[in-house]
Image (cartoon, rainbow, N blue to C red; front, top):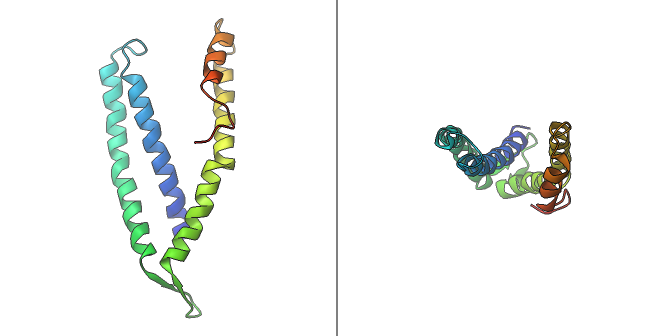
Length: 137
């Protein structure tokens, strides 16, 4: 259970890292954000905080992958088998069902936020032109 949680956290941390990189790029744009340097710096600090989390999880999972697990019955299982099995399941969820649910939720939030915006249709058209909920990662 603990290893499954660590693998799941690794996927969350990597996703957060990429999201913060994207946000930092957007917030650096003077045409979009007042005092963009300050906004980007805040996100840069948050992103820097993510780095040790990702590094710790990567190191711990790599070390476990290179070990042998011994079950309560004494049965030995390679760490590579344990980690790769959990990794593959998490990757499939991350790129499949979880991604689709996230994209659908994000699109719904944007639609809701623009409900009273007179430029709603134009903004949504531009947003939708960037990709679809079915687009690959």
